[in-house]
Length: 361
Image (cartoon, rainbow, N blue to C red):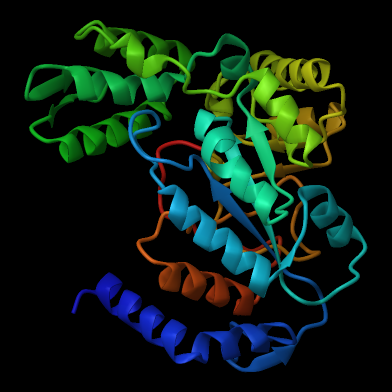
């Protein structure tokens, strides 16, 4: 049996047999030592930060789909089985621990329209203290980020293949799945080159087709929708203006992206922005200068997409997040969450295991 299929089978058995509930109960007082594989008494809190991009299916963003009913199952599960906390509370408790039981925080990146239409009613129903990191320039203009345009372009190109000069290869476009996979590979390549080259490459690809404008409309939230969510307790923080790869920008350009996003959100919402999420979020996507800029601008934390849990030893500008929400079953979601809650955190000076590569965050 394939490893992932075996994992799903185990998750299903544990979930339906009640063994998973016993494991969750165990995590309230114990965690599993990485070195001895023995249970150790919890002496410090551990925080799992869930990362979502969209709730809903169809259209932009093509790389992420999560049916609304599955998202509701997940929120119901964490409300019933875990201590929930806001990002503000999480950072405060990292500095002054008060409870040693594992806790879960819910975050979204970018600000897609489905966060309002699909996720918000569920967040409100289950009183989930969520945080949304906004690509502020996309919200202001109503236009999706550059990689979303690429995904749409590769879904629209009539040819069954695409030659991309900057990548030095030809990509297969014979199926919807191959087009999504090709775009993910192209975006992955473009993340590693200077921004000026990336902009030129995107323009060359878009020139091969006419983007359907109907697919580009109403894909991002409006400020009115964001203010409505804020009034119900959802927090909104910064994720740059245009979602660039910050490590590919010079210091001045990095600061402009970060400062302008912070100021725009503060002006539109009338509250201070204190938290940040690095675009894409892998260690190679930002630099020490990025962190220095965040500190100068009085941010309190920054979130990565490095896989793992957080304890008081984690760097506040290197918070770890996990993307487990798009799984096929509640059993597997619950299983992965229980494993994380049982996990001993990696210390701040040790390399954390990388989460599976995602094309955008």
